Length: 150
View 1 (cartoon, helix red, strand yellow):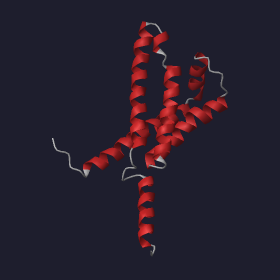
View 2 (tube, helix red, strand yellow):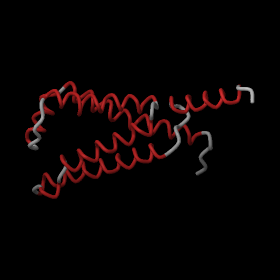
View 3 (cartoon, one colour):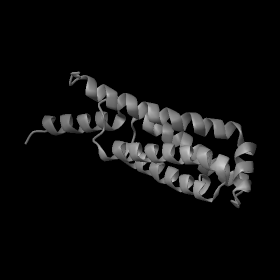
View 4 (tube, one colour):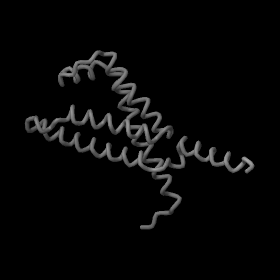
């Protein structure tokens, strides 16, 4: 199967946007269901105020998801989200300390999160795709360099 070279940048942009939607939807859902999130954190023995939950878990995910969607500061945003998912994965999905039925479900969540972490690292390690604000900024910067007389 031959993939047209012009299709590859579109697939990169679409992939980045789909991953961003995951964070936007979950961040928004957490903002709408703060009591559920607070109960989960209390069950995991996190000592956190509702304000910290609102600011860190919900808003952080939602805002960075929006930044990733439009392609603003992709490298930093992708690495920050990967780091957040890394911390949450090892603290919330500790399948190695659970019983059989919990272990299977949390192992699946753990592996899914590992995949998302490496997808974000991949996004952050590449050049900005052609549908991102970062790429538009780089193109404008290059055009300004070419306009200036030497």
